[in-house]
Image 1: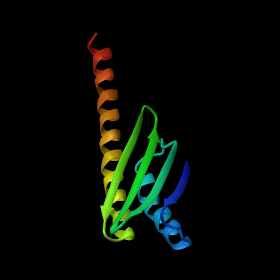
Image 2: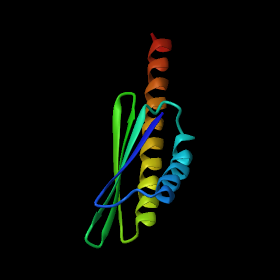
Image 3: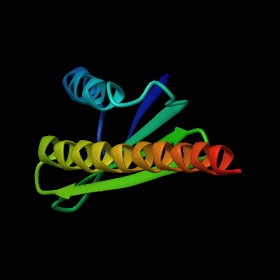
Image 4: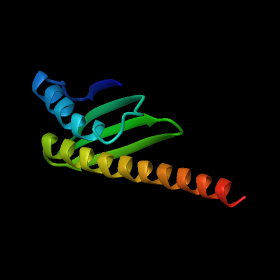
Length: 106
């Protein structure tokens, strides 16, 4: 899995980079099918935004965390990403079970 972290109007310090990487490990435990993830950290006046686009087979999962502190924005982004990945994984397993039922019924 490739992880790229970039900053717009903010310098990505080693502390921010390691924080995002450590938080992303929690999300990656949910699925081994992640192709790559792009994280963009932005600062707009008093708002800090953390955006992530995670590519999984068949879908791109996009989330945004918006807070007054960058670390809090990263936490919000990671929580949203975790929920979306779990929802995607549940949908995949539900469809797999439906196809097995259809084959056995015929």
